[in-house]
Amino acid sequence: MGNLSDGFPTKVTFSGAGSQVDIYLYEKEVTPPGMAGGGANDTTTMRNLVYRTNLPKGLITMMPASFMGAYDPDLYTEILTAMNVNQEIVITFPDDSTLTFWGWVDEFTPNALVEGEQPTASITIIPSNWDGNAEIAPVMGP
Image (cartoon, rainbow, N blue to C red; front, side):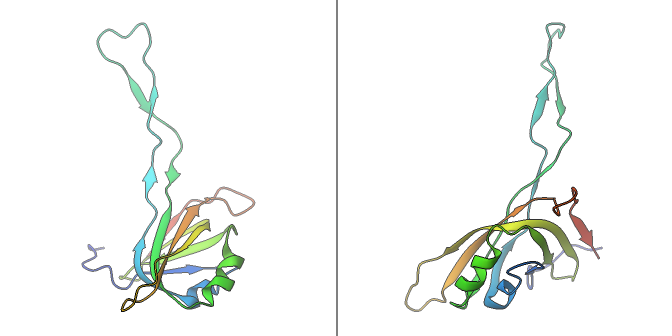
């Protein structure tokens, strides 16, 4: 597996309600979800001699994903059906590898309409890691 040399083309697809969002939004920029360990658990006690001690937390937080793209005005209707609907989301990278995770569309924000510029909107996706029945880890596929 090599390094990506270009971010083009990266796509975001939805599997559940509102899956038609894919048809009405044309990705220009995609930011995949990051990961955070949640900081340190302070394990310092009165028996420490020189240093404060810490250990990592046991759980990992998947951070929000986002993308900005050109849109068809019909997206308004479709985005309403996708808002706050937990569903499987797939980010397809330029090398055709995929990141699949569960989450929902949390924000849809149209950007300013400016003469001479293509209208765009920003969408924020919150990973849930939950399919409604069980905890589901994100899956990176070939």
